[in-house]
Structure formats: C-alpha cells, structure tokens
Figure 1 (spheres, rainbow, N blue to C red):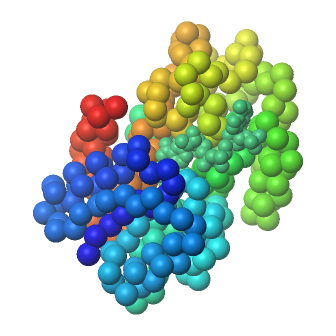
Figure 2 (figure 1 turned 30 degrees about the vertical axis):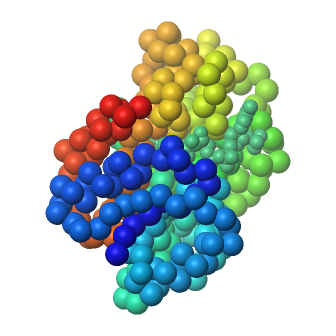
Length: 275
Ligand code: NAP
C-alpha cells in the first residue's frame, strides 16, 4: 500500500522527498507519491483508504476544507481548524486530522525556543492555513491573538468561528499595520511573499526588540518581509520547519513511529538542498 499527497497543483510539493526519506530510513516498503486530482476524485481516495488500497494521504491546497466536509470521523485538531491535511485508517474507520498547527508550533519551539504561555500574538491572514495555526495556538494558554487580514469580513468570520472556543481573539486593521511593543510573535499566514519582490506593508517602528517573525512561506527561503525584520536585528524563521514537522506528525498517524529531532533535521536539510 502506498501513500500520497493530493492537491492541485502538486508538482512542487516537497512531501514525497520528506516521507520517502523516512520510509527508507525506517525500512518501510511503502512509497509516497503525489496525485494531481479533481475535487470529485476526493471521495474515491477516501474509499481506497477504507478498502486498504491506499495506506493514507496528505491533503494540500485547495482541498483541505472540502476533505473536512467529506469525512465522518474527525480528530480534535481537524474539527477545531475546519480542515484536514492527513487521512488515515484506524480500527476499520477512516479518520481526518490536521497536523499543520501543531507542526507550526513545534517548529517554532525547536528553532527559536518560543514559549506560548501568556504571549500576545499577531496573525496576518485569515485563509486556510490561518485556521490551523490559530486553533493550535489557542490551546497553548496565550494571552491574546490579533488577526489582521486584507479582507476584514474574512478575519471577522475566523474570529466568530473561534469565539465558540475562546474570547481571546480580536481583529486588527490591515491598513496602516503598526504592531506595538506588546506583541511577542508575528505569524504570516498570507501568501504575500510567494512572488518575488512582494513585501507585507507593516511599520516596524514600534515593535519590541524581542518580537519574532515567523513566515509560513518556505519558497523563497527568505521572503522580503523576513529580510525587513532581519534588517532591524529581529529574529525570523521560514515555513520549512512547519512543513517537516507536520509531515512527522502525519507519519506518526500512519506508522505509529515517533520521529526524532534528528530525523526531522535530516529531512529539513534534504529539502534545503533541493530548493
Ligand atoms: P488561502 O486560504 O488562499 O489564504 C490566503 C491568505 O493570503 C488570505 O488571508 C488572503 O487575504 C491573503 N492574501 C493573498 N494575497 C494577498 C495580498 N496581495 N495582500 C494581502 N493579503 C493577501 O491560502 P492558505 O492555504 O491559507 O496558505 C497561505 C500561505 O501559507 C501560502 O503561502 C502557503 O504556501 C503557506 N502554507 C505553508 C505551510 C507550511 O507547511 N509551511 C502550510 C500551509 C500553508 P484575503 O482574505 O484578503 O484574500
């Protein structure tokens, strides 16, 4: 039985590189491939997992929310983030989980030593990735989360969704963005920076010297916004650690193997070389 990452487009996905490295290292016979799919094929993939023709899949853009709506059995992180990035079979049932948020937090801790407790966090963006990240950081005893998105109706919708769980989320206008020194962490979940020369319009005159800027984008390795923070002497990280950590959490769901930090770092280096 094989494993796949499914989405559209899927050509540039680094998931096969990461998983095939671990599969070989742990002497597993499975192979991890990629499938470019139509939305109507999703149900068929779920059926194949149920029939044990496929061991499991990762789901990527644009199908994470659609997969969430198709699966009957959802784990807590999938339920809270309204999205599924991993499908697996357990006790004869097919489950959906979302490992993105936890993958993000683990990478942040590994790379910067960040502690979430009582921290104030600014999240830029209110798209699919934002839901995964926000649902996870809400579980980490933070003080406050501010959401800033270009389309304010989308940040309001996100806040409404999470207010069922928490009252700690507020919105911040995208216009004239100028975070003050009370912010400990700024997370970019928007796609601004994917294209060459794109930079978030954010005024850094008032930020704390200790603020960390974490960008979910990993290609380019260093976004223009990361460069802007670094020019001010501020700590930044890109999204590669998140990608590898969410993969490690999926691997655990399929094989019940806890990958080590060494496994994670090796896969990360492999991705860096391939870029
Ligand atoms: P999405 O659902 O399409 O959301 C896109 C977000 O970017 C929205 O908030 C959108 O704002 C904002 N945006 C797009 N163009 C903008 C612009 N010109 N100015 C201001 N805001 C803009 O996408 P997603 O799935 O959330 O993914 C977002 C990013 O996260 C992508 O770069 C993706 O590669 C990255 N990601 C990384 C990982 C990882 O493992 N590292 C995992 C998942 C996603 P509006 O609402 O105003 O349109």
